[in-house]
Image 1 (cartoon, helix red, strand yellow):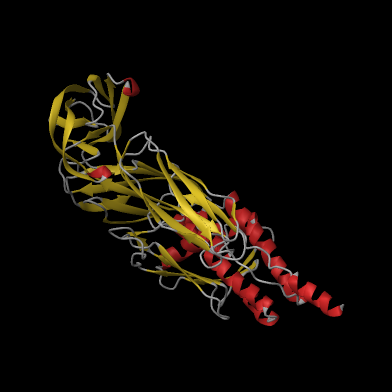
Image 2 (tube, one colour):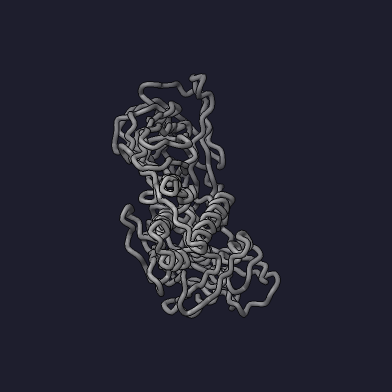
Length: 533
């Protein structure tokens, strides 16, 4: 009788808690090791590893010795913004600066490209389970993009926010919908904690609590895990016309010994994913993917993530590649999207081309935004479309000739063609460009908003596309503004501004004057304003 009870207890051994869906690959890999220690009765090792890779008492090593002195205070203030937001969002979370801790942040001048990119990385992240080493180490590049350009406090805040999120076990997403959607670009977005991240943190904390309970009570359990198998990680679609949906199915098999659960996140709102909620052991499910091409044209190269409770590969990235043939395109022979007017009355040429399989007739056309005379005629010829990745190709449509007024002097403004056609699906179509007179600043004014004096920094670009120039000097009528300029993209310049912490609190106004070597456009003035705290 006793042997039968023992056998029954063995057969009904308690199972390990399931991995939280949406937790990061690093979290799941470490958690699975903890589970195996518990299964083998190695409770001390399980507790040590769990303490190293999880918890709400976060110790932070801040290494800013490579930063210029004037940026040290600005950047740590930015880091504190991310820290405070996470602390307010996650009850019980504490963050303490220490010489040796679980999270380390440091800075380097630049970083090489990531393995799956040609763009220099804006930051890179390392993970360790070793005692005495940081669980997460974030290395932030002081300059990013090509050519390298100085980051500002928002980038530091975003990267520190991501580092805290990944320490808490939250998986990344391919869109900038929160800290976990960080980017290597010089994005102007301030990212934030979002509800999805908080839900994952809550699930991770509940999961860790179950593991701690098993360790404290010395309760062994049986570890089981699903194993996600994908037939492919790249979906290649056939050419479609703009407006036609692209549809795919992706087989996902579970080769493990526990049910497989899946969720998804997408890089583009045009991608719609329907994954199976659960795939039983030994079974296969279908992930349905539909791409809405209504607003797409040309080369399509996007990805989506499948997140699962498979601890060996909890995150899989699937690429979608296809070509979307546009219904129409407004183009220039030089490929420019910003048109520089010289003010001398010279004519400008544009082209409206259509899908050769779905032609239409142009019945009326106007150009809004500037005073002009606009004419059009049928046209056929060779034209490239670099915006969608199409080289020189035989195209048909209309040649548009615009004679701009010499009286307009509008800086840089949006201009739009509005065309009417005989196609009932395209009764009115719009094509947008920018019109620019000479050398301008973008944005034309800089408003900091209400900001702490210790982190008041911003930048603007001095630009004239296709017509290089040189900056001779950058001056400001206030001694409280520090400025620098550097070469940017395609002959432009990036001017960086920082209001010094010694500036008085309250309303702050100043004017930055940029002098160039062009006698016709010698001076560019930019107003800056802030409310300093």
